[in-house]
Image (tube, rainbow, N blue to C red):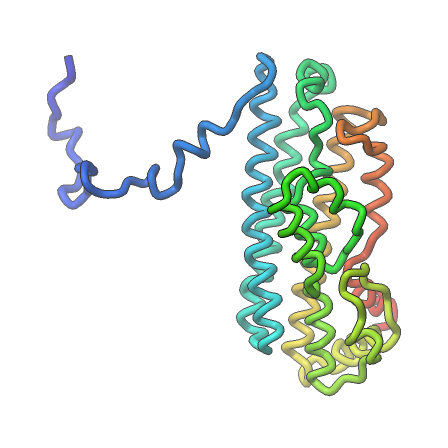
Length: 281
């Protein structure tokens, strides 16, 4: 029998308790769909951890993409202060997915092996949102598009993102718009290729860092980009070390060399000139 409310049980009279005809918190967030999407393929307790960590990371990636796309459009329109807020949010969000590796690292090798077979060939390597983040940062590798041919709509979406300029392309265009000399070959480059380092871009950033007061907005843009790349490299490093801890040097479920592959991608720089000029300041 339900206990009768007492004075101690009372809540503020203004708080809504009748939701027969209005939207609830759970309905607004579609929690019934979200919280029913953790479908284990094994009966092992720790598979729940594995699923939730990756689903949460994908949600954070969705926000990162949303902010990066907004920042790209803002920089195109020379609305740099708007872009700064979005880019700050990107780097703050990145700290969340970096910390997710700490939670996943509580999974031991023997625990993971209990359900690893259930994954088949599914792998984080196939994360299409991560690929879109790479595309938005200017890292383009056409061979990865083949992974998504199973889903035509998704493949088309990725292909469209692949063809768009990355944030570094629009940042370099902003340098040129500010009167800094940039090679035409860079400004008119084929954006479906991965960005390659250029001396005129390096000299432009060096000029900005040597006269911060004159180029304050572009200096701040540079530092926002450095923040994002720094966080991305931290994420990649923690990914590599977590994989090393859990599976050692076994091949990944998606067919990659696992730790060996993750170590190789650590070498790539998205905004190379912004790192190079630090030795010359």
